[in-house]
Length: 271
Image 1 (cartoon, helix red, strand yellow):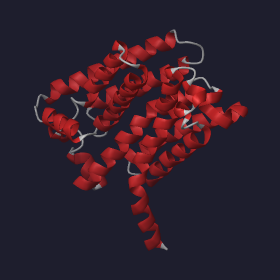
Image 2: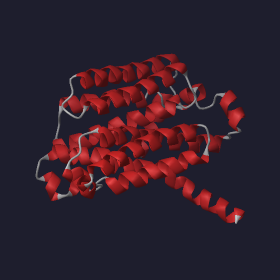
Image 3: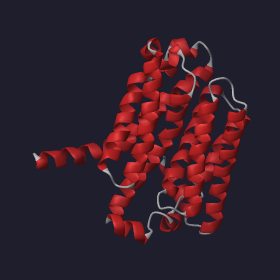
């Protein structure tokens, strides 16, 4: 996020009206829950399960924000940033399209209202969970970044794992479709389990997220959006390739890489 955007978000976050802002974010999340559930009922062949899973994902975020669970703001913000990034990529690759702009703005209505110190005090800084897990401010900030980045990868992994498979997007794995399905489902399970583990401060959560990233990198076609095979078919396949496996790997790597150094130092001390 640029310095200007970060400054704007922080200033908006200091406005106050925490309950109103929470209601706005929850309303935007509920709109996507309804939208994805409705689409799943009349989706093109092969897409019903993926949209149903997306609806369930946003439903969890809605409940977490409404109930003020300490990780709810992080999880919902991750989904919001995912939508904003997809909308920006879509507008760049496909040109100005009002539905895509609205899609991005609705996700911004998740991110911006939940930003700022006053909203952090309502979620991140709850004394009960910090005392339970013995978390200081640095630990909370590190955990927030990890959960936000990992949750931002979840929609991409869902679409990649549960959406229709094509030669261009699945590369060599298309030769063994059963491996492609198993790899995708395993990656999705690992992301969901990894998020739960990280929130509970379990080291295996980071291992699960790293494993999911490895599976997506192994079975996905990361640079398909930049290859002539995809681009020749127009911007939609290229956009789908970027918004699924490529974005998932980048976000999962961003969630895990900050812990590689501390983990290596810990293992050296133990040895």
